[in-house]
Image 1 (tube, helix red, strand yellow):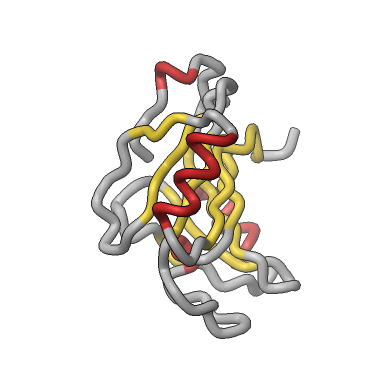
Image 2 (spheres, rainbow, N blue to C red):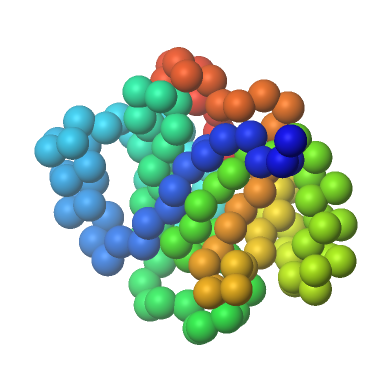
Length: 136
């Protein structure tokens, strides 16, 4: 069984946070959930499944291939059952990784096409009850 258990969130870069929130909340009906202070503007929105969309109001596109601060880039967050084991597999494959700056049990890398991936330690898939969102 692969160590990846579930999609937790997808992050999208936005130019104007109020405009994006009007679309995602007013048009699509998503709800804002608590977001920690990450040092840049953004919002976390919840879906009925408990999965989330993270809006990142962070300005210019990152440099191609840059691994610095991949959490501020478009990325897919995946729950994994064995984060240390996955870190070893990535290292053995020569894939650079960086830990989350938030202190969470998480790491980031980029795939061969430069897409940012976030892996979060999780024994269980995210709750299907949107009322039980956790501040990742």
